Length: 80
View (cartoon, one colour):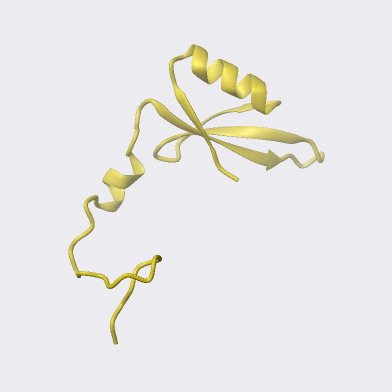
């Protein structure tokens, strides 16, 4: 049985270009992720994480998260 990738193309059996730790740090230290979260009281806030998943902070709204990150010369990326 041939294994295929997500595009349906035949896999070559080659080793991935990154190991798990290298992939987790891809884009670090400038790349940060913003993810919506629901607080226990029902409010929606936005969690901010480093490229490797380290929590950095929480913002009350998406726009203020973007503004703060860009003021620190960080590149925000959304996770849905």
